[in-house]
Image: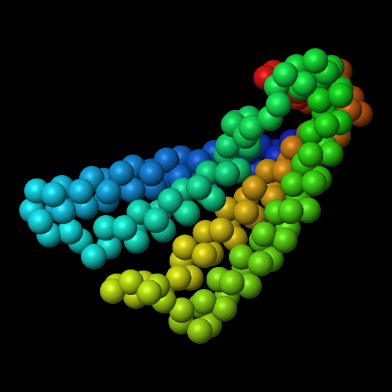
Length: 182
């Protein structure tokens, strides 16, 4: 049973790592789009119509798709001055509490972003710019990215519980690194 659970958790980690890579690629595309827009505006005096809107949508996609990877990679902000003073066991308990609170918030974000995206899709909502791009693709990125973050938070809670139950098991020793590092 533990092997299956460990496999599932590792698959979720792998998938969120891939989404982090995708977010990085999106940032590169955004960089190229902004660079092209600047060159077209200041050198050729012919800015593209999408010069501001496309990078904005790409920023939403990169930010939300990369959120779960950031959590996985311990990239979110925390008050290390307090965190470092606690034992790995206390850190694991704290991770469970914080992750549960985050799950509560993220659940509402998923629901509301889905309702907004669904409304935009059904009503064919478009941007107010000259291009009139559909709003659904960027809005659904919020839902997808929040869902991935929700999954990663669940993985974090499961790992913390496993660590608290059996810190000396092979999986517990592996997780000790998570709760003992900065």
